[in-house]
View (cartoon, rainbow, N blue to C red):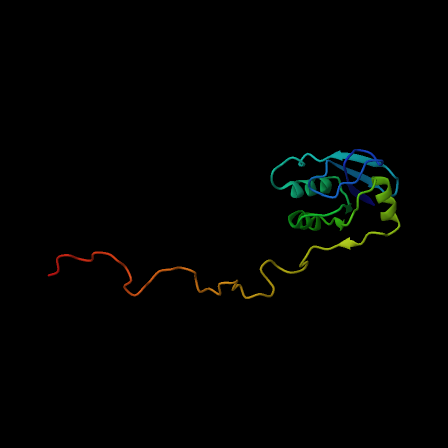
Length: 153
């Protein structure tokens, strides 16, 4: 299995990084051969969409699982669509220690919130705090102060 671990540096002794989209490095480890491929995250400095771009980067490397601290909702959707299993909750440690913890089964797979539901489906009445009553101050019913017509015939 190819697993991606978010990291600060490019080797197994590097510290882990808790944020998926902003991690400087992805260490892709083949758990069968112990081969490690460091991949620099080119989207780390973008102002928007870092998580989605990062998801594409690791999907292109044919990763089957991601081990990280947290994943944003858009990146989570992109990873799920690519068939990549997500394991969140990675604490500050080294990549080597995180890999050992993963092998020992100390991480549980994370699922996208509302997985299986279509967008816009669910509970709620869409009424918010205002209940649709508006907050305007209009007087209505002739409360205007205009001059009206001067010449009436």
